[in-house]
Amino acid sequence: MVKFQPTDLHFEARVRSSFEKQGVMATIGAHLIKVVPGEVEIEFPYSLSLSQQNGYIHAGVMTTVVDSACGYAAYTLMPVEAEVLTIEYKVNFMSPAVGEIFKGSGKVVKAGRNITVCAGDVIAVANGKEKVVATMLATMIAVRT
Image (cartoon, rainbow, N blue to C red; front, side):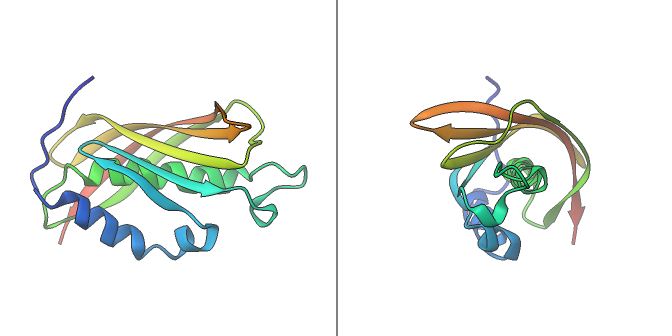
């Protein structure tokens, strides 16, 4: 596993502050459970209000969470004057999203000065067992303010 060195020693506080500004994360009941250099994990509970017609967590909700996990994973390595935005992503949905808790996990694959490539998974937790239900490959950009 690649170990990353953040350029901002206060990266975790910066990530948490930015995350708290995301209304969509509050709306779905998501919270950060892991913030380390190059890796972020977000968790949210099952809710019927987040489901599609069959009762599974909606693909759009899963994509929203894993996109944020990947973005914040990239953000942990960005300089203090930068913000993070998604350039593109591709998602594969591998199983119906059935569970009590869901985790969006994002990890930096390759960090660059402006562009960062990340990989992410959505993990469903049902009866204490974890199952990857979606996977993402994403490209993020550092926008200097």
